[in-house]
Image (cartoon, rainbow, N blue to C red):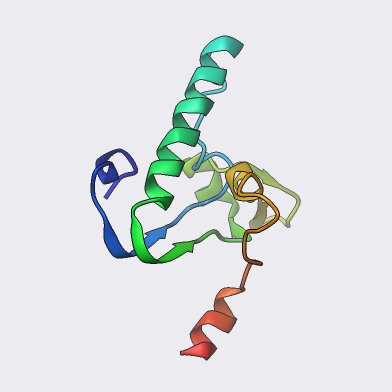
Length: 114
């Protein structure tokens, strides 16, 4: 479901995927700066709603690279990489969770832990 639809709901497990700049938050760069700031605050509020819906487990997921053409079509912000793949930028909202947030765990370790 979308971040918008999660308001008022709870679940044992909540997974928020796509925690990369350009997706979460998604802010249109062609808008005036004041409108961009308003959109960013709305996206921050929606992210907060999403991460507070869980009763037990919260998973925040992102990717470190995407095929360059897919990243462009999705609107993901990227830097570096090579001709075919681009490095993504983690969502600023992840760092805003503060110093008490758990350390990131690579997906390969999550799969092995099961």
